[in-house]
Length: 302
Ligand code: ARG
Image (cartoon, rainbow, N blue to C red):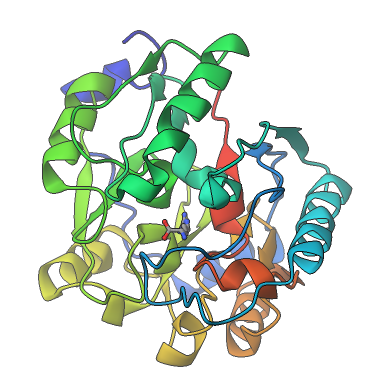
């Protein structure tokens, strides 16, 4: 595929961030800059918990459909108020999890990769997203052969493409992705079923290639992956079990403002200390499906 990342395929790996001095970190804290995001979302018109495919989902727990919609509208209004562009992909009846638009694709300057879900309950979403993306100028969409749940497991950050596997997206999908996009992929193994997608365990705080920044819950990863993360991001923010257990890591950052769960109180404090501005948005109903703010958005990277 032509475009932005093609040249990177010749590089052995993305740049290592390297350790920075305390003064440099202090400077960065004082100068966090927001970048406008282009996001795709899907209204939870058909949202419900009618099956259980992750430990957060419990059919016995009632979902307040009107509240789910209202909370989602607040999320969208908040993102727009922060200056971001938010476009809406129409929801398909019978696909209750389609609200988690992050799982709809991976859209990069080097091409758009569609998805293939691990669970048959979500299979129909793949073509719904791919068809819409192609009709709206984000195509062509590569239909993957291997199981790949889009941005839920695939997070570009500062020239790296971090890719989770272990529960949904497979290791084989990482190879497919690397071939299709012509760039290296950094595989990370998830080991805790509560954190079944990479975006439930790691937040991309700053995607700036000059000083990429992430936060993650180490307990969600195996030892080898923790070592990879420590090497790539020696100054990363690491979070505690309490933060991860309220799905706190599932947050949307523009490099300055971080939209996150109001339950992630300790995380908000940590972010403030690092120069970010936490923006809490309550998605209690969508949490019953195992998702938070980041699950609800698919980033368009032009
Ligand atoms: N119920 C959905 C599932 O289990 C939630 C998906 C959340 N999405 C995400 N990007 N983490 O597939």
